[in-house]
Image 1 (tube, rainbow, N blue to C red):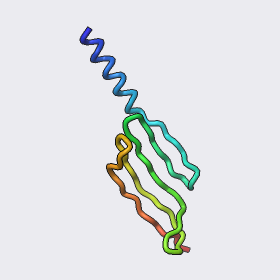
Image 2 (cartoon, helix red, strand yellow):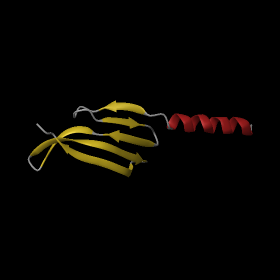
Image 3 (cartoon, rainbow, N blue to C red):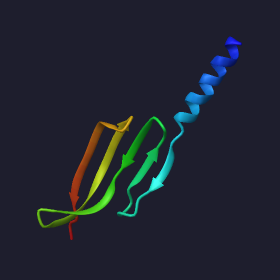
Image 4 (tube, one colour):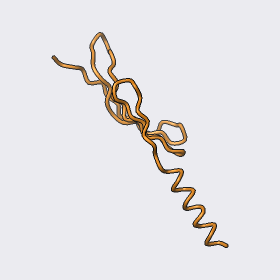
Length: 78
């Protein structure tokens, strides 16, 4: 009986950790969303201080709370 509980808990934990990719229509942002966490890789075309560019980087959310953010604005050079 105890072995079945341990195996069931391991299977449920594994299922909660499997991410599914979600493509956003903002220029290339991808979210990898699981039940316990979400990783977001933004790649969106934005405008900052009258200069066109894109935001790139990584964000990590655990239980919908932002844990890590490394997103930067990169201007487009011509």
